[in-house]
Image (tube, rainbow, N blue to C red; front, side):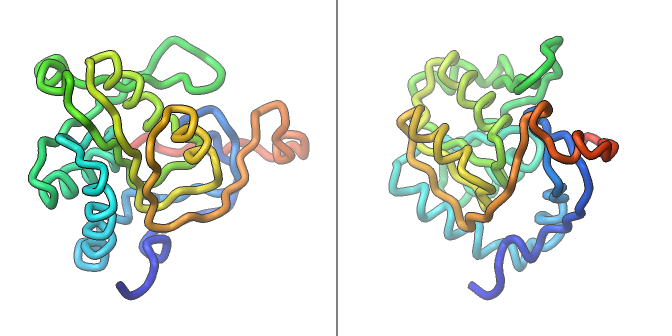
Length: 196
């Protein structure tokens, strides 16, 4: 494999509120990963190989980048693909977004071993949401996989949930609770990001 996954991602510096509610000085345009299918393919194949050792019967990805990745990996492994749909909730604060397996797929997810994948994981909002709903469906999550794992939140969540964590690249990323954010304290305005 030549290059890095991170080289395929556009990013910008500023002050951003992540889906999880955490704040960060960096925004990664993860959709740009899928603009480079030829360069992305070896990284997807490597992640599929790593996840295959956990013997998943299905691969689940949260909308939207995780769902795209889940389709590619499920195809490589010859297993079912599940998509966890994103829903805004009335909750405020941390982790206000929910993810659900569509009703038509819930029964087929039951009792299956499932690998949860996302294009990248920082605080893990999407992966946590997909995991919670898979468990509610009666599925057995066995591993989490990502092309890029930012920071250490994914490792903590995987350990707490008893799941393996497979990441192609691991990169630092500083996240702050809103009350601890130095950019907020400095009066730097939050930038608005279009939801993908």
